[in-house]
Image (cartoon, rainbow, N blue to C red; front, side, top):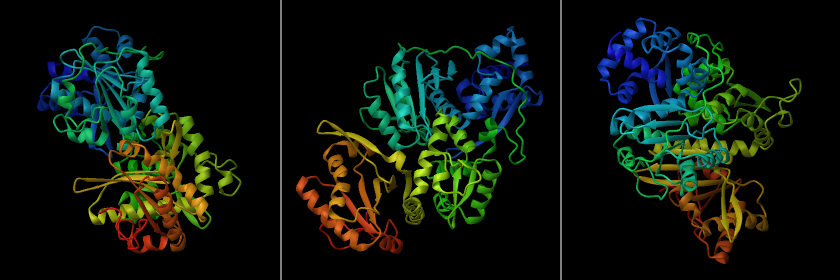
Length: 548
């Protein structure tokens, strides 16, 4: 066995599931030498590969050592195989964990490869099972960097608790935080404002796309985005390279068999079996349970035959289902689908099922909201008319955005849109029905959506607008959304919308607080779409465009 082949094996023992390009980056071996060595190891049966693709990473092959490869490496390094399984993340238990987190692991590896591009080959890399950190990296000069990732399935409260736990130990030399979207980035930025070492945060997709040299990383202070190369200059030389106790069990892994048979893949292999569009569909169904097929098709941006193909495979794998509620067919995740996303993002599987399961409480009873086990899924189904109206708005926005050249940066359901803030010494909140961010020509347009069905009297309308008066009286809207958001309020008919405009004008004049309100009704939206001249603002009679 030549030197590059042994180096590749050692690196795969420390960092299983690297692809060839990442392997070349983190090790400092030339890409050509890596490809040659990987091919030789594959022919010898010392490595195996799994296919992988995600919404932010193109299809690739990810490598790991086989059982024979681990025995060979142990002999080459004159260590017992049991010791190798203890000191490296290559046991059967570790393989299962990393395969369950495959999308997250791939994102961390891409950032690690960018770090190597900027600062030279990575000296050490360490994965964590239970630590608040996802991974730790030792740079070529001995300084250390910790990586924390917040995926879409991990709630704000759970993530805040993870960050608080970081204070229980000596920090690394710097902390890199990967957030799934801009609103989570802003939330993490506020939590880490006083962290004792340099912190840099980035939206995961942007960080991967930016690589080592383009700006994507933000300090908690809110300064301009910096490149990863510039951020790494600020890493403290005093940082700790964290470790955790090895797992109690460390068995040699069995040879990996990724079955192509529908429904035959074990849970931990599903991230390697699913395609990019199928994973996007899972994330959308996690965010918006009880989606109508037409709305999911609009959000995915695919045609009906393609949606049928995607949903057919997800249903055969037991990850999604189509349920008849009344006269309509609606789509949702199964408990297996919820568990898949929770494990990917290190969230609680039990919490996910308790909140979002659509499993019937009584299999013999009809599918009504009373017969749904997940508390939040049950509430959405109970108010299915309102739920469908919000889904319809978001679907129409997605379609029209593509037609008019807007980028849909983010669309958040109600449970991810709530904002808590302090006003006059008390804790308050705004809880919109949805929120999102659009971008076009370098301009960013955040918005909060309220679809009103119950506010039909002036007194009730005043109560509905009061939280937004408090919110916009603070500095939080700009801080939470990195730009001043607008508030979209939709009513069922024009008469109620007109009454609300009058009440809103009176309340904003009384309080002296300017709320950027745009009001519409169902008929106007169906005629012009969310991006058309379907909106009215207090004091002006002509319809306007909310996103110019």
